[in-house]
Amino acid sequence: MMSFEMNDRKKIGLGLTGFGVFFSFLGMILMFDKGLLAMGNILFVSGVSLTIGLKSTMQFFMKRQNYKGTISFGAGFFFVVIGWPILGMMLETYGFFVLFSGFWPTLAVFAQKIPVLGWIIQQPYIRSTSWETTSHETRILRTPHIVDYD
Image 1 (cartoon, rainbow, N blue to C red):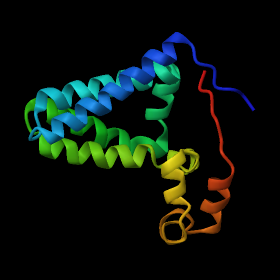
Image 2 (cartoon, rainbow, N blue to C red):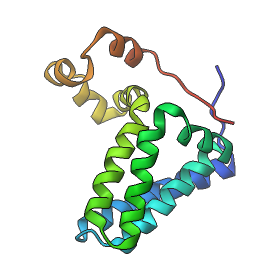
Image 3 (cartoon, rainbow, N blue to C red):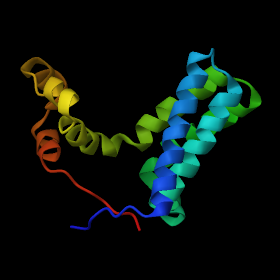
Image 4 (cartoon, helix red, strand yellow):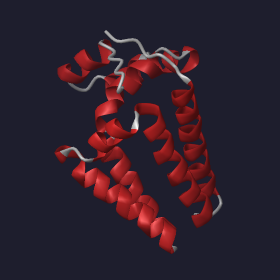
């Protein structure tokens, strides 16, 4: 298993990704401000590119099974830039969920290890309704995978 080493490029990439999410959230809170939303999108995509590398980013967005999400995310970004932020954010949200649907099990394992959030997730009612729906997902949730894209 490869370890996830943190060099300066990845630190900057994670920071840009975080700022991208923050500006997108702020843009939605402030009545879909297209300037903040566009800035959030640019920061998010550039942060992901710096974190996993330009080649891996291109491979990820150009995979055949990711075409629907890539086109939706790109069209949403276009609509945000031309001044239709609500339609753009709806398309981007759909594209985001399609693109990153493979990462949800890994995110679930990570969330279970966060002190307060992990305790909440471990409660029987929440665990039975949302975290373990099939045996395949259960197997994935119990085996964390750390991937280094370099």
